[in-house]
Image (cartoon, rainbow, N blue to C red; front, top):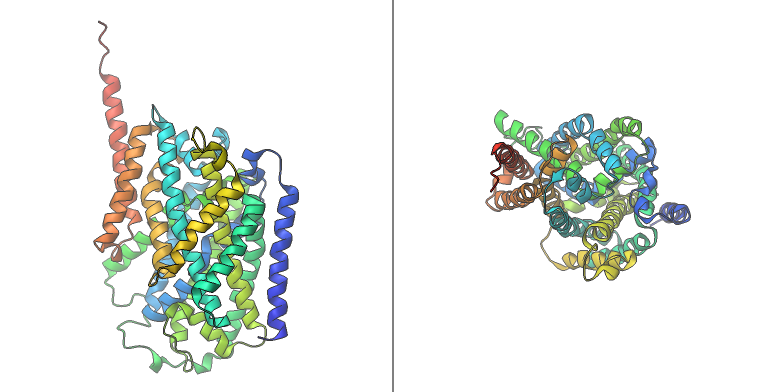
Length: 474
């Protein structure tokens, strides 16, 4: 590692540290308002911060690994995601923001509560909160795994050791700065992510002559965008990941938190295309890069999720390794920090209320450390990949919560009991769908969301029938 690499790493760390300090100094006294950064974010900070949060360590490891091992066909994943993002931002995002602002909701469970009627809303909020925190803890684990894979090969250490050290730092600054700190550092870290993309693109162009099509593995359709898939399978794959994207935007608490932190509806509209462009520039390019790395003569790795590191080590100029580390740290830290901070707010606002442990659960630094500790347990489980951990958590959240949040967004009020059944039903269907292997055809968030919508429609129908039954006075 050269002095240029070290300088770049130091600059990235100092920039994130400055963002944390600014966040602490600007933190308001209204604890509830601080849960959504005082609804103060402008379009650029909102879009790039949300993009950094959405990207996660999966992009640097899992996406590259998919392209490396499976070929260009995996570019269908970000392309399907693009369809879902466009649908969400065009039809739903502003509605979610408006409803949350009008109802003073600062967490995802509170948005769901604002769209229900009848008894049981408190129980519904608690169940939703527990599901979110549980699955998001797995999602955070995927970020630590990603850090371990990137740092392990660079530093020559065992992956779990690197993951543990990295996670400890992120958990510590999250406990200090909370949601506002995560929002500010996300923006700073998004800039380093873009710098890494540009750097990798320059490297690829400079060594393009070293890529040899004959090095492609003996996998049918490896260099084809559709692989060996039939037209119907391509459509199903795109639809599945489009639903996953909608579910991700509706059901991921850290993403919803970003929409709620906007300073106006106009900001939501302005941020749309900045966010979508950022996600596609990073995700699509890294997936395609994984395929091209497989064609490089000198680059061969046992773990496909370490292909990007091996590629830069082989071909990168001085400073490129430092840029990779800065970009990787930024990508992983932004997602993990935002997710943990948002889960802490959910526990404080939606679980602690009325709880026997109310004093304990209201202390954000302590809850941050607890969630961080639980997320660390997964890094010691051998055989878990970044892709499997991340996509499982994301998809099941969408399966469980996308339908209720969607109904809240279009102002259709179901009963609390019906919404509870929709959440649990969608989650169960998503789990079963994945367990029997149907997720290879269409992502489990689609059937989960579909079942949730069916249950909510049935709930509305039953409610209307009961309302037509005349009351009998005795």
